[in-house]
Amino acid sequence: MTKIMLVDDEKSIRKLVERIVRADGYDYCEAVDGIGAIATFHEEDPDLLILDVMLPKLDGFQVCRRLRDAGAVIPILFLSAKNDIVDKGAGFSAGGDDYITKPFSTQELSLRIEAHLKYYGRLTARQDDPLNVGGFVFDERRHEVNINGRVVDLTPKEYQILHLLASSPGNVFTREQLTEAVWGKEYLGESSSVPVLVRRIREKIEPDPSNPRYLQTVWRVGYKFTED
Image (cartoon, rainbow, N blue to C red; front, side):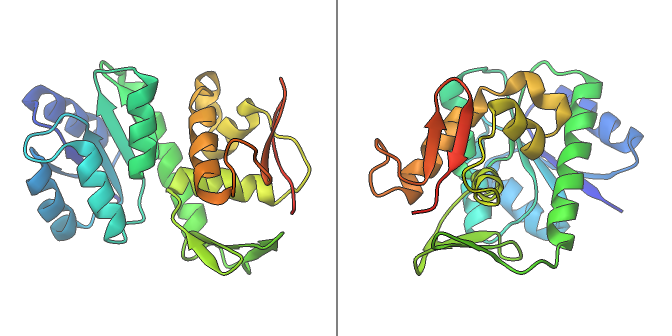
């Protein structure tokens, strides 16, 4: 059975999320602090992780980063009472896939869990040969990109956006198209996260991020990938 793990030090949140998760037919496990989260994660081997940002001992960003460094390839969703773009950027940089602000509705959490599980399920099931374009080699099994012989450390969402753009060199994708492709239709009103991820991708792949060669902005339209 698909298992959802929550890490939150608020008992009321743990009870709410457990009720939602079990009602949707998933198994459930939990931890209450950052140190316990890492131990429980390795013991329970969940299929999706929901992390509160403000945790005792280790915060959610630190937990996420440690799990990604250890090779965790599952959806990781952050929970926070804050709705600040800086915090969202920190979450994506740490390797998170999504950001849910408190309070949230039952339907919202259910939809986001379902969307991320579906995406990761499709990703791990793919048998395609690596995409090779303009010196960029995308290996979907390893979920990594090699640029002219150098492996670049991208978070899952950064990888997804770059792979999508590189799969159609020269074609322009709007923020809305990228949001729908990476997160799903239910997130179309939340395209503000795309520029944050694009900026971080450029910092990792561009010789000069302020003058991008590969990932270019098309003013008032969106973004495109250009072969060198």
